[in-house]
Length: 147
Image 1 (cartoon, rainbow, N blue to C red):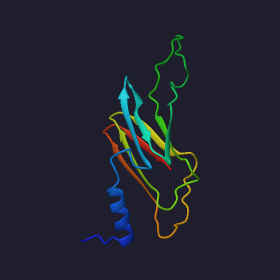
Image 2: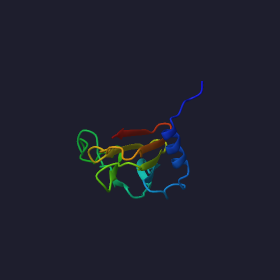
Image 3: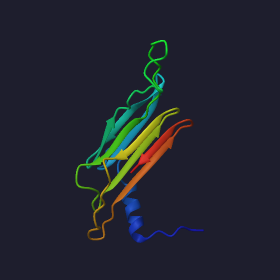
Image 4: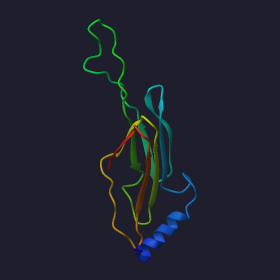
């Protein structure tokens, strides 16, 4: 069965394919997480205008209380690393193409979200806007997307 693609979609796909490798084109982003010393760590975080990505460090936490019955500190539980996807403008406008690559290494826990919501403006003169996310999640890893 052959997939039918509208002329407009084919033009957008060609435009996306012609863009330079990551993260050189406008609206590109790349995020990589690795498991380092028993914790999830942010390995790479790059983005180009108008996409902006920010890292919020995971907070250390322990189970139940901070101390054992003997008074020693409990070992820290692994936390998640947070990345916020933001826009420099008021939202996604006609003609915008955002490509985001995410790589979550084995054993990592990562959360990607936006500041509140992503506003998408009306189409102007037949131009469309696209936000593409390609995620690679290794065995034993968790990626939570909260748009």
